[in-house]
Image (cartoon, rainbow, N blue to C red; front, side, top):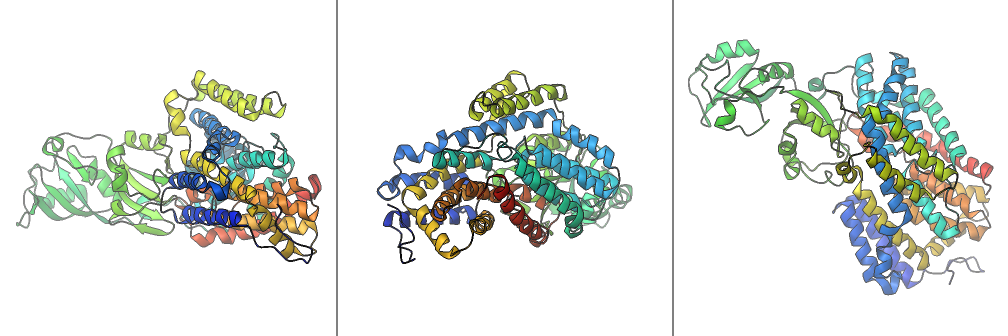
Length: 608
């Protein structure tokens, strides 16, 4: 039964089934926003509730787990692996370096290069790994040319989002929207379904960022600032352990301080302070000292000296020199459930990677004390000290992005043509309708492994499992919203509120509503919940339902108002030193422009 506007123009109350589903939607919103549980766990809970409440939701146990078998879910999983193949070969970084060589020290050319690489790459590679690669590239360019990295990183994130609208495989949201559109309208997206409009919005965004946005993006981090200065750590208090082989052994404290250019505040022996004013240093002593970051780095290079809290050093370790210590690096936590919500102590971060965390930056706030017990958030940036092997392990881990490059990672550059050929083949087969995108993507995964672009053990790390579980949870929720009459009821409210406005105005309202919703919940959840409402509303006012599907898809994939609206925004939040308000200041005018451009573009290319 249809529930909505009656002849008198009144809106009938929703059925009980719809109220139950609305309750689940509200619960999902609350869980996704506040994250009392990791997002993937919340998605599993949602699956359980849909099945338990089957009399009202209409979703059986088998249907509640249908999201795992959805074509969208499996295709997204495959695309993560294909993106990993591109990342492992260093394709994007190689292209970036060549374009950056063209830009030189010209800030506008730098920005244009970053926008071009991020935007165009994101059309064929998932935009999250594109931004992960571009963060260190942008930081390196900024440091080399004395430009603030803040001026480059936010545009990189924005460009990657709009670039993701060039093709079907640019974002997981596009694939999910295609799946929902196929279910509701029998019209899945083709590979280049919205490439024309995607090119228009990308060019519009690029022009805005180059002409207006670059003046609005603040230079939060001064150009060419040292990491220790950036984190407010010089001079700072630290502690060193003295091993038997250290040249400080048997020296007076005053002589040792002069040698290392530090101020020794205290000598600890057996955990207790040594009472004399100028004692001789013995093997096993710990020195509490005040030093600049540079002085501490020099001190750590001395044989037998360990800067704490690098490790809990035992007697045997104190006598063993440790080479290549005190490499400083900036590490960004990606918005993944494996890190967000936990603490460094719970994650055993220091032990796993053999590094010391010296400071944490969250936006403009820098934390030096009790870092181990601080609940982490996606986008947090850590200043760590470790050897090059430790930094390399961090660089290879998909939960972290090393923003300041210490040593170039070992890319499989000899396989670049192979990786590009595989992705190109997947795109071509889907575009020519030779095989469905799902079949082509899975074949591409096999080819990536068979050719050595991705190693078998890297497949599972390549997948963002929180996204997979989120898709599996919200897909049946969208079905329940439709079957219960909830989508029809919401559509009736929109139609009643729109009055006699033309369909193109209602289309713009749906774009705006989806944009605002995406700032609160994930873009995938917004697509699943808003497309059924849009389709129903379009049928009521005699508009083209497919146009409303496209409006919701574009709005959900281009969330630029806050750092929490899209995961790439969170990824650049720490490295750029941004404030929450910076996103709105730069993004609000852009979003207003895109509201008009996208709505008119849909009307022009597809009709309303």
